[in-house]
Each structure stands twice: as C-alpha cells, then as structure tokens.
Image (cartoon, rainbow, N blue to C red; front, side, top):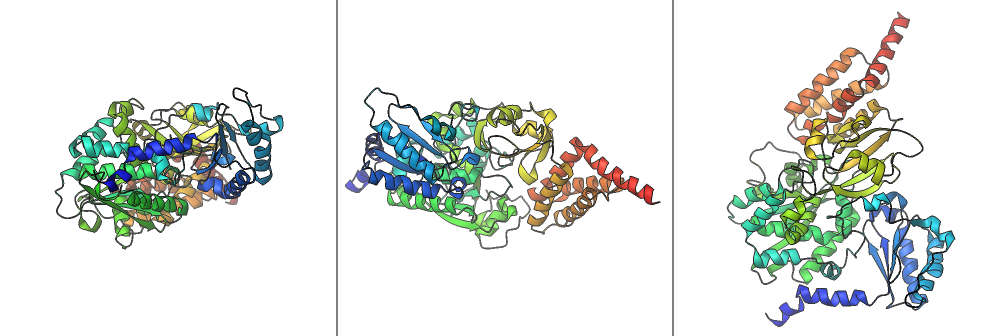
Length: 562
C-alpha cells in the first residue's frame, strides 16, 4: 500500500476521529432537519456556538447540527450529553430558553466534581422530553439508528460510527453473487411502495451482461402528502444511503450511480452533494476504491416535484431530460433502463438498510418483522396524534401500538376513526382494525398498501367523503395524462365525489363511482392510475353510511321539492 492509500485508510480515520470525539466532556446535538430549521434551529445553533467561545468552552463542548430526532412536532429539539450525567432532551426552544440552558444547565454541570450528579432546575423541566416515553422505547431503529446522533456533513464521524466497513467487507471478502445472496436471504423488500424483493431485483440486474454501462439509481422522489421518511434519512445520514448504493453497484456490476431527488428537498440535496464530494476527496468514490479494483461514481438529478416520477420508468425519462411519463413494462429497467442501459432502481430507505445487513448478517435482519415482511419500517406518523413524527418499528407492529403507544393516542379527548397508509395510493383503515399488524400482506387484505411509509391518523371529526376527495384531487392533478383510464377516469371520479360531497349525488352516482374505480385499477398504465381509486374504494367499503347519508339527504330534498 502506497503513502497516498495510507492517508485514506478508513480504520485510521475511525481511530483518529474517535479519539477526537472522546476528548469532549459535553456534546450538544441540535436537530437541524427541515422541520426543526423551520422552527428556528439555525438561530439556536448560532447562539450555542457563540456561547462556547464566550465562556471559553472550546475543547470541552461540541455543538453538532444533526439530523431528525423524531418528535418533529416538538421542535426545535436539542439533546445535551455530558459525561457522567443523564442525557437531557429539550423541546420547543427559543433564543431566551437556549441562553438559560447554557447558564443554568451546561456551565453548572461542567463545573461538578467527578461523581456528582447534576440536578436540573425545576423551571426547565417544562422544556424536557422524557427519553423513557414509549415514543422512544417502543421503536426498533436500524435505518434511523444514527439519525440525530452524528454530524451528517462529517464523513469522518460516519466512519467513526462504523461507516463504510460494510463496503470494505464486500469489496475485500465477498463476491458480487455472495452479496446478492445475502440480501436475498435477508428478505429485504423495496421500501418505496411495491415491496418487491430487493435481492431478487439485484439478481435480475446482475444477470444482464455488462456491455458498456450499467446504472444503479436511488429514488428520492418522495411525493406522498404527509410523508417525509426519505427526506429525513437523506438529511440525517446521507453516507448510509451512498454506502448502500455502492454495495448494490458492486453486487450488480453497475458503473455509475444516480440520485434522483425532488428539488423541494434543498437540505437533502445539499447534504448528499457534500457527502459525495467528501467520498471523492477520501477516494471512496472514483477508481480503485479501497484498492479493490472497483470503480464507481455518483451524480445527482433533481426532480421538479411530479408525483408520477416516483414510478421508475417515469423517473428514468426525467433523468434523461424528457417528460416524466411511464412506459409499458416489460421490458423492465433491469434490462432496458436509463439511456437504454440496464438500470436498477431502489428507494432511499431500501439502500439505507444495506450496510447493516452486510455487517450484521441476513439472519439478524430477518429476526425483525414477520414471515414475509422482514426487518423494520420507517413511518411518518402525522395527523390527529399526540406525538407526531418520524418513527421506525419492526414490520408487523400493530396500528394500536403505533398510534396509541408510540404516538400517544388521539389528542383532545377525541376517538380514533381511521388511519390512512400508503398516501394517495393507499387506503383508509377503520379504528375497528386497530390490532392489524402493519405489513405488506395484512394491509393488502384490508384494501390498503404500505406505500413509502406515510401514516395519517384521523379522529372522529373526519369526513371520509372529503378525505377520499382530497386524495383523488391530488392524483388527478398529478396524473401525467398519458393513458385514458387515469386521465379521464380520475377526473370523472372526482366530479362524482364533488357532487356527492355537496349533497347533490344519487345512488346511480355512487354505483358509477365504483365502476370507474374498478376500471381504472384494471386498465391504467402505471401504479398511479391503478392505485388512485384505493382511498375512494376503501372509504366506501368501511364508511358507506357517510356516502349513503349524503345521497339520502339529496333524495329527501328532491322529494320535498316535488
């Protein structure tokens, strides 16, 4: 190994960084995700950094602008970790409170003698979130394990936490076929919505002969209303996604990788860009990576926010600079994809799982979840729930556990009415199914899907006809218009829903709504049109009385007029 290679040895980097981190007595992690930034975390970080200088705490206190800490509705959040003391998580902070925390918590705790325990002043307790909340204790984190616990813009810190060891393992000790076999054995399924076997997809892509180029693409085009899982992963731990992509590239024989991220995610894009530059600087991207002979590079393309570009063939057209519309399959992208070259597309969360599977093994990963839905799943838990935010639980965890334990239940004394999973492509699940395990097969049985991981909680005040109309309005607006069943059928369904919601619908309208929905499911070209009727059909199935009441009211009015 020559002198240049020694400079970029990941074990040496890890050792040096760990030594650097260990010299600090106090680390203050400041949530710097999109959610907390919108609540003013930038100002809090500036105050903390200035205070460290003013109080001459350099070398003792480290300020880290980190990723999502989970409880998004309680932001801005900071977590104070002082050696020998209990960690403290603060919520809903402002400029005044952050200064009080510095003077009444940080400085006094640093001045304690060894063995003394700091007592937090009572007046600060109203800003403290207990780390013993079910929101934290009931989760099982694989993808989000390091979110909120490291600097996402520091490659050395990622390496100090075990980053790129999985890449080193596959490049130095495993053949591409062995990598594919391990991922296949793990049972990992695509986290973007369809739930196709990741190992099988890689196997199919690997079998296509390499003529000149083969691509691996990360789908970061997250468009479901209320969903922000992929955005948060990219913001919190971009290197984990890059490492997963690189392992996938090695497994299938890809020469280049592409990140496709919607432009509405500027922070995610910025952190991926910085991560790629850092990888190139440390020679983890480029030629002869880790002296293995493996060559690989990554580029980024930004999406304009079209929901349909979450569909892989539409995404490919968008990267190519064309209009983002789907095409019929087969041929599948693994055979003819980007620029008509073999291409494998995986979503953000899928790739973020890969390093852990490689390091800890397929058996470890498959120990979580159910027989056919392995591992954990990240959800954006939103809506009428006490603790909304980003969570990760084993597949098969019940709706009851997620909503009432982790989420803290429905607030303001209201009753749970329904939960929407899968976004505009999913279905509405009534409260009567509260003990339903959340996994691919069980969700399908009740007319919904996993989707990318959006989960919206609705209380008893929700009008289910309006809910169905909201989602259908979204998919009609986002339809590319290429195929008639989606373009025409969706619009006609929306007109019928609007008529019914205004109390002007008839039983014939209700029957026609169902017929069009079924026709769309059978005849639409891509997943957008095929799944767009799901919210409508599921609400009709479980909340038919609400539709019938609106229709009956109209018929009663007509009788009175006559």
